[in-house]
Structures are given as structure tokens and as C-alpha cells.
Image (cartoon, rainbow, N blue to C red; front, side, top):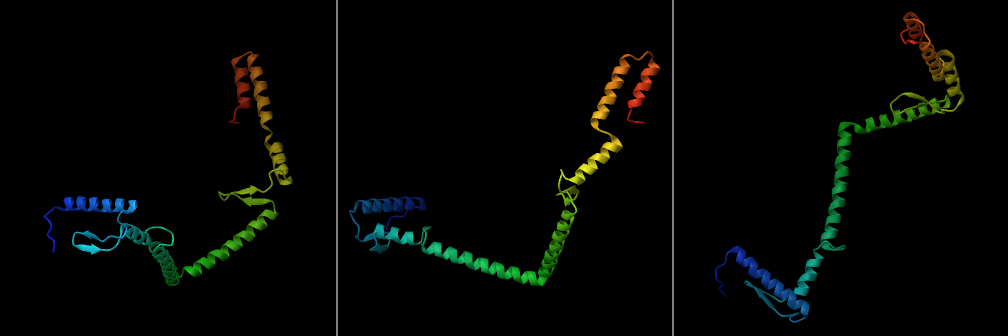
Length: 186
């Protein structure tokens, strides 16, 4: 048995790295492809090329043992997850609630279709909106607003005429009367 001088772990790591690198360089150069190599106390008949091929079998490449094992794990994990989920769905009564929600959603869709046939839709905020902003119902509403409140042009015209009249008002009382006529607190 060969005895090696005492080394700390850093020195041993440095020596083994140097040894492996020299083996790798030699294998790449084709110098010692099939020679027996001795490391610390192990005798091996594996070349660096063979070691690399074996390491590749365990690497991250497609079709490697590691790749197949992780794929199998993912499939088993998903199957187990689904089984546990189904178990808890049954325990908590979630399937019944999900069916009720689906039924309610069907009813809501029917009501939305019915609402649409009378010219309305439900906005994202839950407010009713006209389905067709240029349809006859929109025109009916706009005409009614114009009849009851007038238009913005009517307001502008009223203020313009009062503004002109203020320029020619003879007294402060006359100006006050004109201002009261357009006041929003009528």
C-alpha cells in the first residue's frame, strides 16, 4: 500500500484537480486513451473519454437518465397532485358548489341575452348601458334631454347674451338682475 504525505483538504483538492486536468488534456490529445490511471488509492481502467461518456448519461441532455427520471417524477407528481386534489374536492364538497356556479353562470348568460334583446348590456362595473349607442333608444333619450334641459349651446348662448348686456348695464341693480338670471341657484 502506498502512503501519501499528509495534506489539508485544500491541497488535496488542488492536487486532484491538477491530476484530472492533466488526464483530460492527455485524453483529448489521444496520448493515453486506454491506460490504467491511479488516483489516491483506487486503480481504474476508465479513460477520461469513458468517464465523460458516463457523466453525459447522467447529465442534463435530452434522453439522459437524469432527464427521463425527472420527466417520470413530474408525471408522477402531477398524477399524485390530481389524486389529492380530487380527494379534497370530495371532502370539502367543492364539486357541488362548482356545479351550482356553472348553473348560475348559465342563467346569467341567458339573462344577458334577454337584456340584449331589449337594447341593453351590463357594463363591467355592473351599470346598465345601451347596447347600440346610435340606435333609436339613444335618439329618444337625447331628444327627451334636449326638450327638458336644452343643449349646451343654449347655455352658452344665454351666457353670451348676458355678458353683452352686462357691458351696457346702466346701474349696479341692473347688472345684479342679469347675473341672477344665469345663476345656477335659481
